[in-house]
Amino acid sequence: MKNKLVNFCKAFEENGAATIEKGFTSYLRKTISIRDTSVKKEMKDNFYHGILLGLFGNMADWKVKSNAESGDGYSDISVEVEDREIGFIIKIKYAENAAFDESCKEALRQICDKNYEETLIDDGMKTIYKYGIACYKNAAGSFRNNLYS
Image (tube, rainbow, N blue to C red; front, top):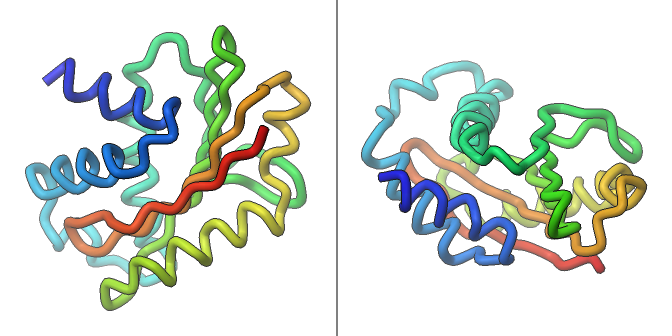
């Protein structure tokens, strides 16, 4: 299990969207019930946000921030891998009716419109990945990412 977790997390450092999607979906299917997201629509993102924070907490060399002020707002999750000068930003959306593509595009649009990468740039990250992650019930899908360098 530890190797699976490390490989999943390292995929974020390597712009491995397919590995991330497969790993996160597999994890969600093994661990959660659709009842876990039976909250108000505007709160559904928080559940998946918390799961990712828990998984990322296992990476000793990562500086992980949740809802940190950055650019013109607050990014969901930002991570700095200082020794590799890699940073990434994650925006999570609940994909109502499994509209994964639309939700991912909306998440990336928000990352770009709000300039969430500013703090990572200021902190010296040379490579920055942006991930829009859409989740629906116990599945995650259609990750979209952009490279900033």
